[in-house]
Structures are given as structure tokens and as C-alpha cells.
Amino acid sequence: MGSALIFPGPLPVFKSFLALVRSRVFLESAGRTFLRVCLGLCISAPLGIAAGLIAGLEKRAAAFLGPFFKLVSATPVMAVILIVFLVFNAERTPVFTVFLMVFPVLSANTLEGAASIDPGLREMARVYGFSKKEKLVFLYLPSVVPFILGGLKSALSLSWKVAVAAEVLVQPFRALGTGMQRAKAQLETTELFAWTAATVLAAGLSELLFTLLVRRWKKP
Image (cartoon, rainbow, N blue to C red; front, side, top):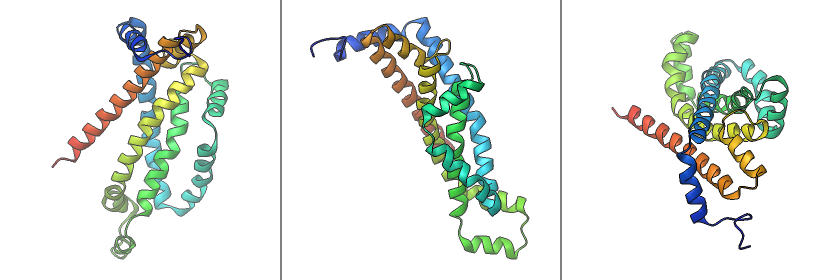
């Protein structure tokens, strides 16, 4: 189109990006969004893993939780954000939305890991009279850890997308999504692209950090 208002070139976006990342507003916004992502993950991870393990140990729990997982997975993210916003304020909505969308992912991954356990090992645990606690420690946990790590990596990427989408919609104070929405409302297209690039970079760096930590943990 030849217009920076419609589709700016890479050089104006890069200049706007450099100016943005040096500003105090961006640093505060990125920090608050990162905290919301971390808080949502910290709530959903232990609960999701626990629910997956319980469903793996108890078939009735799996039958009870299965429809809930499918319902949440099928619900559009924007609908979830709007419903959550009716209950929580703008600051808490991204956190709870991350929890609600990530919880079934981690639960399903953990349940899949539990279902993949060798039936021979299950039979051996039954023959030797393992209690549920012993099955959990010596049979289920070692088998589901790779599935949990894979689920956490997927959940981390999903959390950034969900959190920023919620911020765009509800506009909490100091957030990456709020910066995008304000740039769009003011027709600052280069700044909008800069906010988007910064968000992608932040999500990519957090995923890279998680991968490095997992590799370091796996080393003997």
C-alpha cells in the first residue's frame, strides 16, 4: 500500500521496537504480564498434574473429569475471557484464564502418561500388593514425567497467548496486551507491530529458558 499506517516496513518497526524496549512503560508491562503468566502456571500446574494422576489411578475420576476437559478445550478463548471478566477484575482475569485453559492440557498429558504405562508393570505392582502411594511413587511418577515436561512446554506457549489475549480484551494496568490495544486505538501501527514483536520475543525467551533448564535437569 506504500503507507506505514497500513503496513509499516521492517526498519520503522525496528526503530519503534528499540524505543519501546528502553521505555519504563514497556518494562513494567512486560514484567506484569510475565508475573501473570507465571502465576497462572503455578496454580494450574500442580492442580492439573494432580488431577491427571488421580484420573490415572482411579477410572471413576477419569470418567468424571473427561467431559470437563473436553468442554474447556472446545470453548473459545474469547468466550472464556469474557465470562471470567464478569467474576474477576481486569488484573485477575488473565491469571484465571491462563489457569482455566492450561489446567486441562496438563491434566490430559499426565493422564496420557499414566495410560501409557506397561500393563505388565501394573500387573506386577498388583501381584506384589503395592499400595496406591507406592504405585504413585515407583510406577506412575517415573512414567509420566516426560509427558508432564512436554505438557509444561506446550502450556508455557499457550499461557503467553491466552494471557496477552485477555489483556487486550480487559486492558489491565501495565500489560503487553494493553499496550497493543492502545497502539491500535491510536492508529500507531509501527508501535503495534513493536509491541507484538516484543511479546513474541518474550514468549520465545521464556520457552528457551525452560528448555535449557529441562536439559540441565536431565543431565546425569
